[in-house]
Image (cartoon, rainbow, N blue to C red; front, top):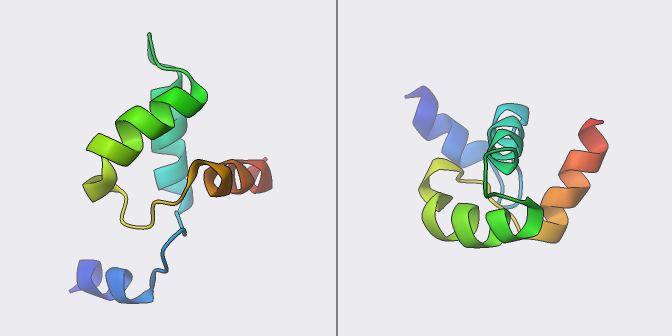
Amino acid sequence: MLESSLKLHRQRGELCLSEVMAIVVGFHLPGCRTKDYYLNQVLRNERSYFPGLASYNRFEEVISSTK
């Protein structure tokens, strides 16, 4: 029930801090760098793991607001 209630309250383009951190960790894997990783890996292959996924520009805004 908790998972379904989260989906109802979450808007598109809204990531929670743990989701942001998971993507940032992926940036630091060998062979993965910033925009290419986000566009080619996260947006294409991992969208189902991040229901509030946004464009790369919006993601950069979220990262800068968490610093």
